[in-house]
Amino acid sequence: MPCPYEPPLLIAMTVSAPRFATVDPRANPALLAISNLSYGYPGCEPILRSVTTQIHPGERIGLIGPNGAGKTTFFHAVCGLLAPTGGELWLGDRPILPREFRPELGLVFQNASDQLFSLTVRDDIAFGPVNMGLEEAEVAERVEMALQLTGTTALADRAPHHLSGGERRMVAIASVLAMDPQFVIYDEPSANLDLRARRRLIHFLQAAEQTFMVASHDLELLLEVCDRLLLLDEGYILADGTPQEVLANADLMLNHGLEVPSLLRL
Image 1 (tube, rainbow, N blue to C red):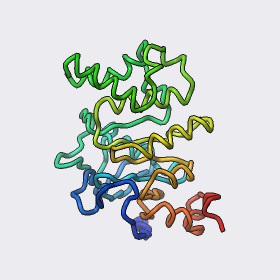
Image 2: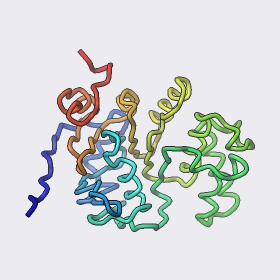
Image 3: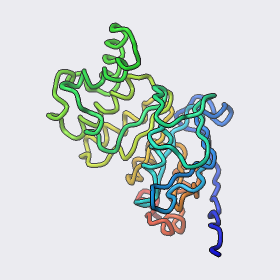
């Protein structure tokens, strides 16, 4: 009889008060509560075994882990795109149900082109608010707000497939912000961006008002924009602390297929 799988030890680290929040989010009720989240693809070993964590208003969370650790799967389960095989997900005082549209929860896909399908940037950004049933005037107002926030106003009448990678990324973000989400998930947002577009993205995230979680292999970006970092591997959250604490732990990083970023090397 095979032995039951034993969960690895969580490395709990002190999470300092966020640099960007005006209040300590730990004093507030959880915005997102995840309890024993599990998921496995048909015919495969479970990729998420028992993920448990809470995210509070104002937090800026980074998510790291080796390739195949399940970061994108985790995001898709949190957003209701996948039906978990176990556990519970709550956004505020309501459970997150599979395939239920929740405009207060936004996901920016790893490939920005997966979110852009209309003839113009303006139409893409308007898609969410229109499907929320908003009046035409409010839709227009939200589109203009999202264009201004992301610095994409000059692109409004352009075709999305004519944009650069960095421009498409910011338009994809604008299409999510137009729905006025409370919590935004960014999946590898700096992938394939040049240095100028990456720096524009960092400045945007530093100024963002929403609570967010961002998964990235760009560890130096996470140092600049996040206040808390989670390490996902083996189906569990294995470390939880400040970016400086988690990323500077050389043994922890090596054991999970990662490296200490150059900014933290002695």
